[in-house]
Image 1 (tube, helix red, strand yellow):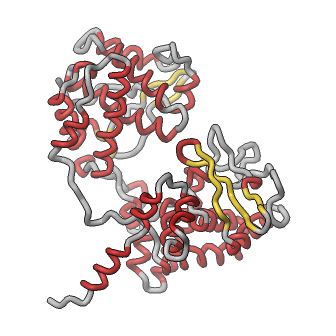
Image 2 (image 1 turned 180 degrees about the vertical axis):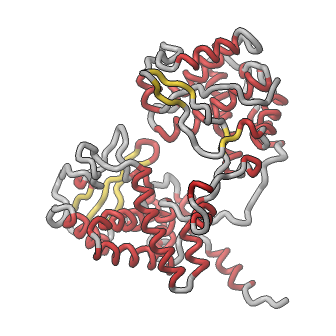
Image 3 (image 1 turned 60 degrees about the vertical axis):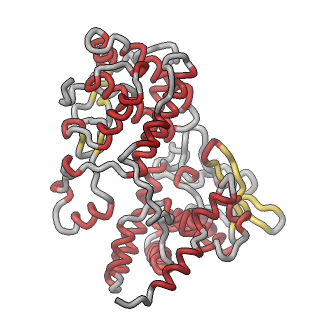
Length: 429
């Protein structure tokens, strides 16, 4: 089969996908999907329509609770179907161990024609219908955030373009491929569409997986980097009230160990000021996190000053009232009930970039470069890592929302590494 890319994306984004009734196979507003799948069924893979039906049913069944979960499984299911039909010429229901091995080889080293140099929408709206985006591909080569920012300092942003020949699949991403495929095949077996699940056997013998214990620590800021992030943002907010929102975001994520999703406005949750509440002398925050689970997070007294000043910048008095319905993070657009994760990440990145500039100016070039690669999740890890030595592990684990103490211990207790580094630091050549 040809390795040129002549396929189309198969599944729409989260909201329109679930707006379509489960019993309807193809979306009426994207006729190209039906045309493409029917052409495969009339040609190399007669079972293509059944493949598509079961993959769509899998997404409907497994991913309704979380848009992030849907996006992850959609990408893998879609990529797997396109490879099976367009390159391997075989139904996913008939795949054996050697077929899955061939797919993993393909994912590790896809043809250039299947790789995009930027993230693109799958579909573009034209005249009331959606048409496949000609620039979309199942794989994307990306520059790291740090690389892009370094290049932006020397050349215009419009000239920055990754080379598809530089595509490389990270080990974490490869493990996610195995995991997502295994869940898909479990569903297909349960529905009596596939005869078995060979993913575990393929993973066990895969030459592409590397056991890596060299750098398994979480990404976090040093005390100096965090001091620059906090102080730079606070000074900017003192000068420009618009930056109070940036300051609040970095302070709440670090102090309360929050994920960006737990601050964002989602279809089933919009954080409110009333999610902060008081019990006797203690303040708490209700976070709505992974697995659609709510948890209470203890609020440090020191953080309350940042909550007060952010509320004051919005014309709100003191600390939140019981059941207060004001959005936790205000949007510039009044009709929005809060901020999306992407906007929150952008505002946090503004703080990281400002701190990076200040660190570079003060001579901390290496630390400044690290800040260029920082993401919002580093704030959660930074807060937990700084507090692990002063808090009981069970309390820290509860605030983080970990189901097991062992998870917290594994991620944030690195006494052995510290001792080993200290004992080896002064070795002589």
